[in-house]
Image (cartoon, rainbow, N blue to C red):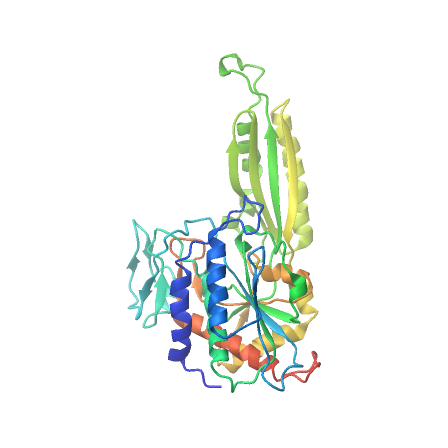
Length: 424
């Protein structure tokens, strides 16, 4: 299949530049799905674009899930259905409002000055240095860019546009899924699984060219509530139990050697995410991450020990720990369906690209979808420095990711009908 770079780039890049301007920051402290109204706006845009492409089986659910189906070409109706998924929201670590994407059509390999004192320095960023002579898009330094995951959305939408404008390309049924609130770690609440017929799904929510991911953290979120005994500070001696100080003491008990900034690879961590309160009531939010489930559970259990230690320091104070699983490592369930990864590796190789399998130091909605029975490896999108005002994305990587989507569709469409275990 001849997919020239210029043609694919022309489908991906304009979409990406449009999508990042929608303010879709999610809010992890809101239980409703979606957690923010801005996600509805982008979802409705995608619904209209999908219909404009000629698709009729397009749904926007009451919880802001976008689901569309591209029907098989004649003679391919009995091929297995596959799906592609990306998320609508961006993280709340940095503002996602009024994003101003900066396109550099031919990067010259020098430092890029952003707002304030921020700099993109190729001497410190080998990925950036490798883009010399290529096109990139970066943030202006006042917001994040939103390549996580609007690059993934643009790549899937561009692949759909290409496929639908080339009816001569045979393929089986394809489902497209765009989800809200991935960044909150909710794990697909209210997801209409009964609407999905795919035997496998591929998320586009990864990093640099060639990165493929089949395992992720086991993730827990814990809320620690501290109750003190307030009194007028002038009469506090021997009486006051300060809940705000209790929460701070709990936070400093989290091992610094097991924090995000002190770990990489397969090492797990604790991370204090938010702290607030007053002498009467205070709370602390803690994330726990580990590739090994027993390691994650060990850290959850340790939180109770920290709570008892804080209570011992502050007689009369109370500490309650409420921990909840967010998602689990998807490795075992993907390993049980090896053809899903093998076809992905073949798709990448067929395009002349080198792939590397690496763990996700995080998770995707594919983690939860895998748990629900649909194995969902993750594919690179070209984004770097996510959740940061230094975020940027490689345009050529985005085009390559789009080609991988199209090659996966082609390969799954060559399967013997009903022969899930047949090799391509």
